[in-house]
Length: 135
Image (cartoon, rainbow, N blue to C red; front, side):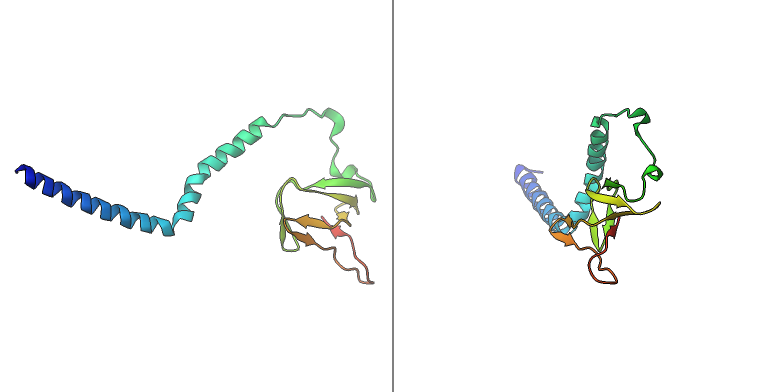
């Protein structure tokens, strides 16, 4: 092939490559959230592992008591260990609320809980007023 034939072949391949890249760009634009989610999984896992590795281990020894050791009516602070759904809102892990022990299996709070930009109201009592919320 002559030089001009080689240049003509190069031009055709460049045009086809540009068209393919443009079509692939448009196709990927519509599924970019799925692509990002797929690619971000290893990064999120690595960050969570690094966060766990940086947490200092506390040796509390005999200072850790079971939940059953709390007496009824005792006031404490409850920390949500995992995401919890209350009243249609998701309470993130690490959030806390002032709580009163209401028996062997109940922690109750009379505080208003603010989650993001919403306030979680206390449930109404049967005789009027507001009842404590079970955590």
